[in-house]
Image (tube, rainbow, N blue to C red; front, side, top):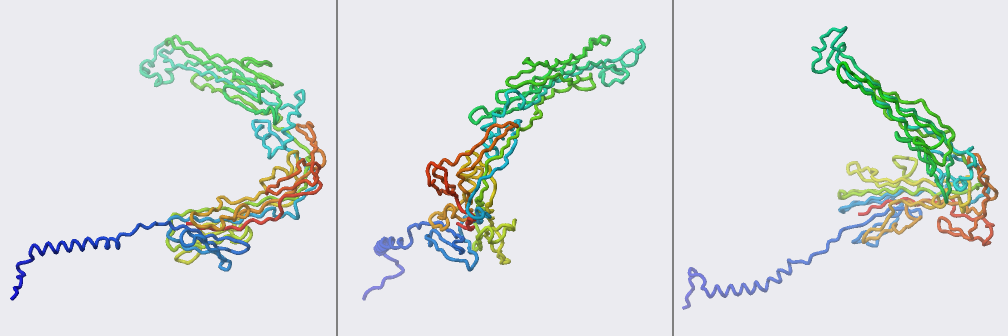
Length: 561
């Protein structure tokens, strides 16, 4: 009969070794399979970006959406019936809200095509003869070219129409006074009690014990006054005089280009001196008067000049009084003076050749407002309402006379849509008729306007496409982009008939017969060009650039994340 193993005796060593070998073999086989189920390849994490664009196109309100994951090519749909585009915020880290107002129209109010006819117009103005002379006469927008070109022709050979200036010399300081208090020890040849009362500090003595010795300072020297006349030269290709008035305590100087006159100050007064040798021996010396300005019609140590003509010179009685002992202090130096005489400005005038033109200017671009937010609460709801035109749409909250593009945010508690971002529309460009002076170099149109006043304006910053997703309206360029203004329009002025007589400072300086336009080809502000049908001869047909009543582009609202 087979014997049964006693469990109390446990496993034999051989059994344990066999069991461990089998388990180790099975474990070795199982490791790769378990690992294959738990260790995964790292996944590429992509940031979520996208855009929603709300805009007007062909009279319809359109919405375009795209993103960099599920809708890269984008989706365009008509939302005219809804009257707005709606957006619920994602979990992105950054949102860019961009609102653009509508552009203003161009040449609004102009009737018919651009045109012109010859005319004349009174043109006059003034050139200052002080330190602002050079900046004013150099301003090409306000001063006609003929004034600069003919400026030096006004001056007569004598000084009859030269410009007068007045100078006063600086005054030196007056001398300071001096004083010394002395104790009085006797009165009527008898000693008093002052020696006992005034032992340490004499200023503490009673007044009857003190006698004050006083020396006055000397007066300053007298100054002088000069009147001079000078030409002011200006030539676009030559001398351009800059005018300087230098007024300090050290000099009075007038400079007109390389012409000048300088006055030096009168002499300083000398200081008065009280010299106490002892109680019975005190010397008082009053200060001497300063030297007077040495008036002269020729240069000396006090006056020097070149290129100007002296007309008057005189000594003035205007010395500064010296200090009076301990009572009054001396006077500090006084700065000199330089001023204009009676000729404070020079007039120019002409019955200018002109055009009675029918034209119009470009409008203003719509406003461009950008707001950046790091995050928006999840499920935040926004409503996008772009303005259709600068006359059609929601009025701006700060100015109901113009329209605005809006981004509204929904109030979670009340459900009300509240304005969050807004951008106003541009103003229309003027259009109509006006008489404009024309001078050589103004053609094809008076350059006070040409060409920039006629070119469309676009909002800044402009719209651009995002990374890894498509934008619809970023491809709208130039005058077609949202918020761009309408262009202006003007005639091409080929010729003006007649002469214009010029006057400067009451003297005839020239006349201006305008020549016909010499070019055979004209380039307009918008790139259009026209050719003369008869090259080398005056143009015999009117041409023009642009058209009146050009529309500005509607606004747009874009949210990118």
